[in-house]
Image 1 (cartoon, rainbow, N blue to C red):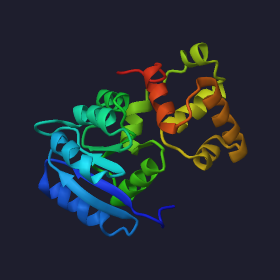
Image 2: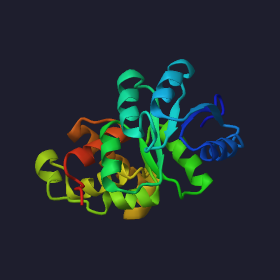
Image 3: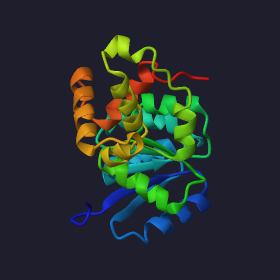
Image 4: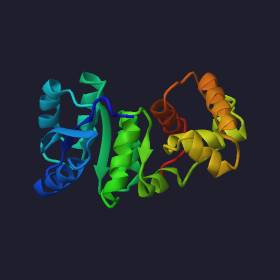
Length: 216
């Protein structure tokens, strides 16, 4: 997957101990290269212009410029850089707003270091990733009522779309729904064709923006 070049990760958090701990753990992984760090979003954008990381792993609440505004500016100025949020907040509104602004994933700070690495790998490959707590908050009010009318998705396609938006791969979806991987691939392609959206991140944003989930 990443044997030819490491995943270049940039860390953004206003707590030095958090930065040191994450950096120390990620540096144990030969396929991950921590290329820099910053204490707020403004500093992160300035440094990222030069460093050009693959992924920015960023907190939400920070001085000077927080994660929401920083995500917005990253997507405007440096759209090739993927944003993975690492936060203590599991509030659905936080997650929805950050996805609207272009974040590719949301991980709570209570996850294991192994899961954080899994999230980095998934986002690097172009998928979305939500840790279990974030996923529960984001999708517990999934509302299928509007999806079929606007997009002409079948009930099964709506279910597959939800699982894609949660960051599940084809094999995981097949296991969850007790169907074959080939059937999942067919559903995924049908969804992409019907919605004219061809990335997992785009499908996740569609699920949010078209009321497939609703704020509490």
